[in-house]
Image 1 (tube, rainbow, N blue to C red):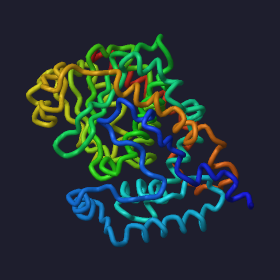
Image 2 (image 1 turned 180 degrees about the vertical axis):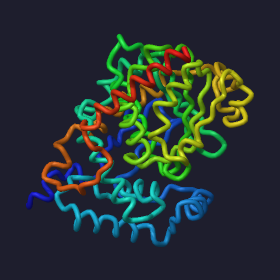
Image 3 (image 1 turned 90 degrees about the horizontal axis):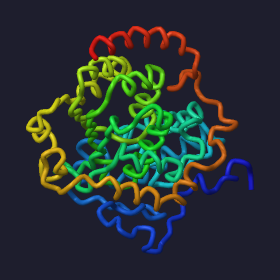
Length: 348
């Protein structure tokens, strides 16, 4: 067999344990997709995908094959999955534009190469301490638009606890799990960030260069549609935090940030009370930080197959202008950070 097809696991969907044990206790979240693609979208979501994503059911697999052919022709050494289920994520995220979907796929893999601290040995057991701390969870009920809600609580993390990149690892694993269901690929997700307890130490720790990397991955390096970012209980220093992030946001994404302060009625106008926990004025019971943690930890083997493999970009020649440009600009970012740090102290 030639070198191009040596890593068969990376070109095929991860093997899924057919036993019910793997999904025990997680009936609220869809299971992994089957090895051979079968559309699971409702007629309503098929219509939504056609209208919003230019996805035509009768051409869907033809479009997947076109993207697959592009990869094999232009990047024959790229050890990436080529199954229908995987490639559809990238087509949907870029509204079935082959060239943009191809670029997103390359960015997806380039992000792993550019940031080994995040992606090396990436599996749920390595971020158990983040999950146990309650830094993030996914609410069990999607909103009325079918969007799952990723709940972040940055104030739960203290810089002395562990490196900030561990939070990024936990977020990335969560996004990988969220993007599996076709419903999420069509509907997107919503982020709810509760800044209760965030002080100067958390606000200044990541820095502009790290912030740029996180934003770059979320905007241009991952096949997911972030439809809204709801910020609640933000302190005065959030103006400084957002000043770090905003220069790296595309205009469309920046417009999706909604600042609610402590006004829960404002939050409820964007996320209904029926899907929110009691902590945020909702009626969906108390916030459960354990269910999502258990779900991720039960998927350990799945993530080992997906991430704990040889470098998929080894031997691949990428275009000169790629999303991640290494550390050469860090000096400038440090200067920028000094100015922004002053802003943070002023706001604080």
